[in-house]
Image: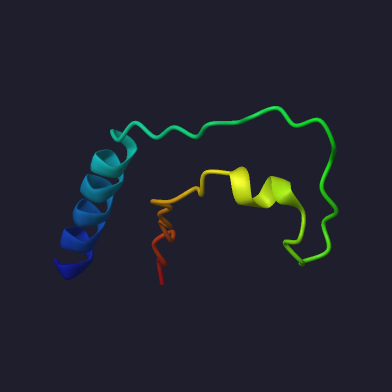
Length: 62
């Protein structure tokens, strides 16, 4: 019984989460930044951060 409730809750949650409209703005750049872990190029200061990420872990059926 608990397993059924868990599975129903999981699918209900996934259905609700999939209804959200997410968007992300991409901008064209002239020069590619150096991917070195150091945010010293000016391009990194002008970007809008991406937020509101969510992770849905698959149910473990044991």
